[in-house]
Each structure stands twice: as structure tokens, then as C-alpha cells.
Image (cartoon, rainbow, N blue to C red; front, top):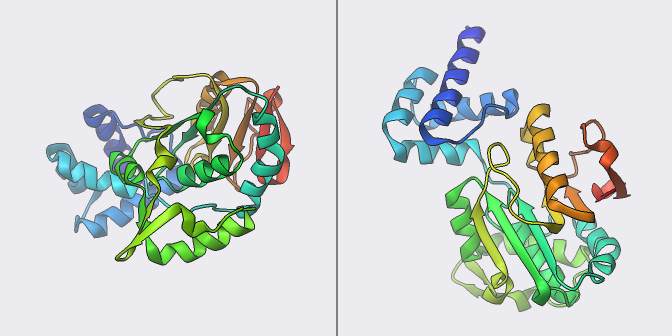
Length: 271
């Protein structure tokens, strides 16, 4: 039975790649299995083969499945000590560049984008920074472009912001309307939101800083190394790479091509 499940998942993932060009073939097997099992109950399918048949013949159904395969989980100023380290250790070095390009890979619904934009504005860097915010999920990108978040989450975001060394009142950055917080649109004036897959796409620009947090934990080692290769290629000499709290360069084939700047916060610098 277990072997049948593994075969069906493999066929589903291959079918998605062949039909829609979304490549989940090197995602962590355990993660994909969990999400597919969840999809079965969501879509009331008895078997993965039945799910595959529906996905192949209905692009709308595939878009619904994509939301489950790329579950966006994020919050503003997530892991405040990480953002404090960027403010204190990375920003002084970024200030030495006449212009800055930042790539946020796997930006999800945009919480990381707005957090970084706020930090850069407070440090006087936002006006000379271009931010590329990329994700494989078009619905997440659309939400990120809007900059509208649930007001019930803003209290936690405010506490994160304060612990991350925020210098103003967090309320300065958004307007509350009904149950939502609409973030200042000038925060995204220098942001380009774009569809990009770390599994299939290539580098598109030289950057000074890349943030890819809590994305690589869903990849197997082969795909992690592909992503690290893209980051290494994209970063300028002595550029910065920041990862999520459970991610590390230590066991990758690119480990020796970076040095830790703030190791406990997963902030690295290209050698």
C-alpha cells in the first residue's frame, strides 16, 4: 500500500511538471506526501490517481492544488533577532554601495518584502534599493503586490518590529480599514514582483543581498544545491545570503564558498 502511494505521488508530480511546468520533483518527499494527503481530503478524492486525473483536465483545479503544495506561512519581522542582526551587521556594509539590488526568493504573500522595505527606509537605503520579490505561486504574488494583511495579525507584527529594532511607531506604515491593514504603497515603489522557480529558472540579475528563508527546508539536497548555485552566481563579490533559522550552508557543496557573518542568524557572506 505504501509503495502504491509513493508511485502515485511520483506520477502526480511528473504529470504536473509535464502539463504545467511546475517542478516539484526534487522537493522533500515527506513534505510533498503530507500536502498531497491533505489535498485528498480537501478535494474529496479517494486516491491520488483520481486527484491526478482531475488536475490534468482542469487547470483551475491545479491552481487550487498549487495553493496546498506551496502553503504560504509567513509573518512580518519573523524571527526579530534576525532582522536586528541585518540592521546592525549587514546594513552598515550595504551603505557602502552606491545602489543596491536585493532578491527575496520565495517571497510568499509579501510579509518579508514589507519588513525589509521598512527596515531599509529607516536606515535611509530604500530609495537606492531595487528589490526583486519572486515566488512560484501567482496568487501569493498577487496578494504580496496588494500589501493588505489581516488586522488581527498586526499586533504580533508590531511586537516583532519593536524587537527587531524598529525606530518608529509601526502604525506609521499602514492604514487600518475594516479588518485589514493596508501598507503604505511607497514601500513597494522599488519592488518588482515576479514569477520565478528555484527548480527550473536561472539567475536574472547581480545582487548585493539575497534572502531565502524557510524555503529550502522543503527541498531535497539536490535542489538545495541548485538553489545555492543560483544564489552564488547572482551575488556580487562579498554579497550577503540570509537563510531561515532551520537552514544552513554547512552540508552543501557551496559551503566553502561562503563564510558566516552572523552564524546563529544564518547570515552568510560570499567569499
